[in-house]
Length: 248
Image (cartoon, rainbow, N blue to C red; front, side, top):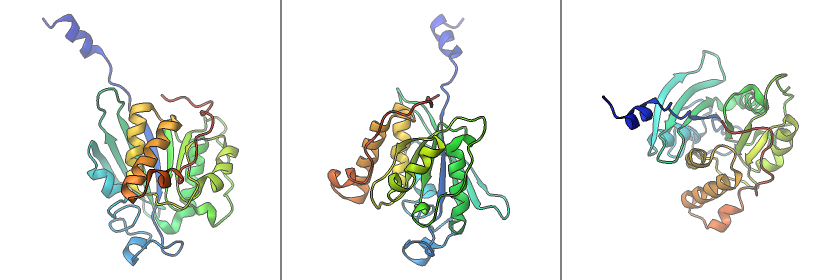
């Protein structure tokens, strides 16, 4: 007969993973300078700056310690979504597992990605955290008209894009979404920031803005090879804690 302590441990249900949904519009040389032609080809998953390059989302995270690819599926024919990648970050002691669902959008369909992201932030997504990682399209155009779902809870959000506090901040406020991390300057929305974000979520939950900012600053300083002070200037200072959205 198994000892009672062991039986009680076996009866404990597994800890639910924190769900993170990430929108990644591929870099498009027609909009911004992405580098050489392959890096800015808006549908080239294997070479694009934001997806298949060294610090692109799929290449970097699929090789990052503790991350495992769960699934990799092509988007529907004629869809703006080229690929959906699901990864899990294994939980260390005292952490929660994190499950990331990344949507790779064709760079020439960035407007669709923007609308889908804002709709998700307004509550269409059930993820614990909704993330944009790519070009700040709102620097180029007016915000799209996105209606909040009638019965939904706006989500906590992170926007890794140039000057997202200025351009995304007012739009997110209108939608009722709760920014956890935004930026103040031009920046590179590369995947080491997604790794740092996932680690913070595992340790502190999806809405701990101070811990999130500290992790993003540290990662940005390390990979950009700049001072902590310079990296700190990139990310917005956290405001009041998000209200109305509790981590699961």
